[in-house]
Length: 70
Image (spheres, rainbow, N blue to C red):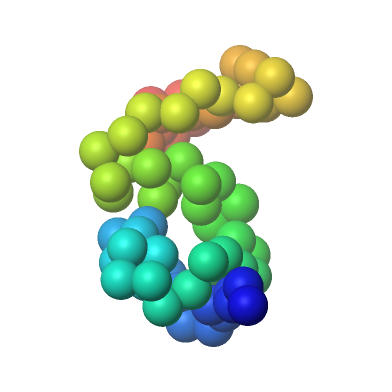
């Protein structure tokens, strides 16, 4: 039976640990995505992985720490 982990999963490292130890087959993030719409990118950065920007975000996939006008 496949299982999903949901609730209080805030970091990519935490999600990876849950999957790695076999506690769940799927990670569902909700609040984390509301806080950070770029959560997949943030999680990838935490894990040392670079992911390509989605086509619909081309030109808007700002590097971490980017501030407009500065």
